[in-house]
Image 1 (cartoon, rainbow, N blue to C red):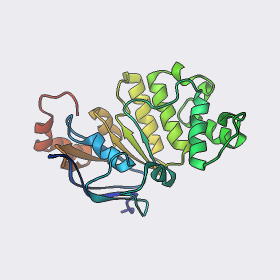
Image 2 (cartoon, rainbow, N blue to C red; image 1 turned 30 degrees about the vertical axis):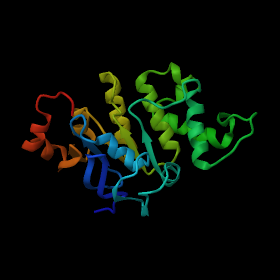
Image 3 (cartoon, rainbow, N blue to C red; image 1 turned 60 degrees about the vertical axis):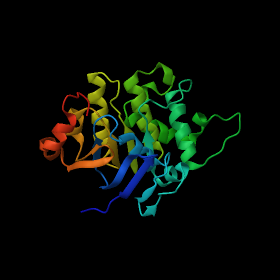
Image 4 (cartoon, rainbow, N blue to C red; image 1 turned 90 degrees about the vertical axis):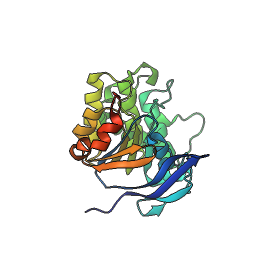
Length: 250
């Protein structure tokens, strides 16, 4: 088995008496699409927030690509190759698609520019930025404002921004949220393709997508790991069925 690119041991987070992450262990392998699913309030987004550095765990460790990143700030995790997209798209709406991606490339490379030299006009950034847009199917809309893109296209743009940042692991928080069926299929195909060159850890409510593209599934309930394995095995687990009973969401 390949060595883990992301390894979590004993991760615990409390808000007062409420335990939102309870001694969580799991490993993410290179090239793997790993889903974290669970009922609302299970602690899925809180887990992602600890991995990216927005929340500090009360106990446990997070190792990424051979580094202990448990107490590392967000920007250092990003420079190591850990990227995240959000439930709500986080692009700059008044910038073009190319400018958004070029800014992400600039941030990763630590480049600085004079006020009269927009990042999108720098040759060093244009080539990889256009290649990333081409990868996600947005090259033809490189000069469209992000605000003019459809919801699914803004998700594609976020992934292009992660690609140009040379991430080794991409954390996706509900990438299918608010999408029509056409967009769901397109983004699912894109995530599958992205995982050929990096690992993907995703929180997702759409179980058909999880079944289709994910190699491994971790089920959370009240901050604890309820079950894990491939989708077929966890979907047959009676504890998982009970956890989702009466809910249309995963």
